[in-house]
Structure formats: C-alpha cells, structure tokens
Image 1 (cartoon, rainbow, N blue to C red):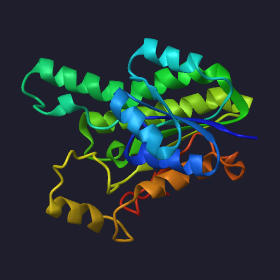
Image 2: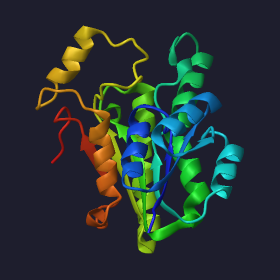
Image 3: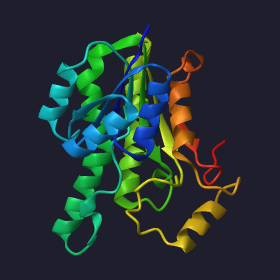
Image 4: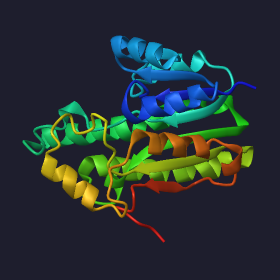
Length: 238
C-alpha cells in the first residue's frame, strides 16, 4: 500500500533529501514551503506534491491538514536560523524578536503541524522532527528552541504511543550542502566542525534522510520518545 508522507520545509537541504528518499520508495509525498516559486520548483524536481504553507501560520497549517486523508509519516523539517537573527542583542525588542522567531520556526512549526494532522495518524504512523546538536551546546535561542522541540516530542510520544504512533527527533550535527549558514561559514569554521567528529567528515543530507526512513520503517516500531544523534561523534551520549 502506498504510504502518505508529509515533509514540512521540504524544498531544500535536509527536508528535500528526506522527501526524495521516501519518493524513491514509491510513497506519495507532500512537501511544504513558504514561497510558491521554490515549492513549485522543488516539487517538480523531486516528483512530489508541493503545498505552499507557512507552518508558523495556524490558518495555513489548518488548510494543509484539510487536504490530507490518513497520514503515515510526518516529518517536521521546517526550521533553521531566522533571517531576523542578525543584529542580535541590539535592544531588548530585537532580542525578543530573535527568540520569538527561533521558537516559531524551530518549535511551533512542528507543534502546529502535528496538532493539525494528529487525528489523521494511523496505528502505524511516525512523527519525526529534525533537531540539532545546537540543543546540546552553544546554541543560543536556536539551540533552546531545538531543545524544547526534543522535550515536546518526548511528551507527544507518551500521548500518541498508546495509539501505535512513534515520535522521535533526529538531532543533526554539522551537515554540509545546506544553506543553514547562509554562505557565512568560513573554511576555518568548517575544518573545526569536522575535527570535532570521530569519523572526520561532515554530515551529508542523506545521512539524515536515511535515518528518517529507518525511523518510519517496521524495524523501528519500538523506538519512540527518543532523540537520535546523527553527528559523527561530535556529541556523544551513553
């Protein structure tokens, strides 16, 4: 049976790689993004459905949910560093705006989308949210939002697991080939991030895509409420 998959923030980077991985498996995939031009282009390139949806807007999220029937996989990949994050600390108003933007993009997008589609999840569904190593160290307001995402996901797991729904976070380390740093990553910083890893390489978007695909597979039905760290050993847990 064809699986129905929704990937928010699926027009580029990690989100696009995840959408492509499920599409290769013949799933019917819906990607979302805020801008019609990028959504249309990405959907055509990936061979998936594109929906314009700002996941911080409750009305747009409700409209997205209304388009869907039963949903097998939800991937909350919308997020990143807000454009408003430049000029941090210039004033209390700017600081508040920065924190609101990070919480909106990196936490509330997942909360709103998941809540909107919750009644469409089946007994074999998976909710996967994309976190960050920034939640563990030096993350500022972005890291705090990603830490809150993991806490919320664990709580959501306790709520939905009795229905058979798994909920997990993939905490990504440094992933090359994305626009996360908006072209501002220096060669020195790149080398430092790679040096932190055990395997001495940057992550790739496919590393995250393959992990997401596994978490939505039959072999992962007893994995829920977890944060899966995918960072080459840059941050380790016991």
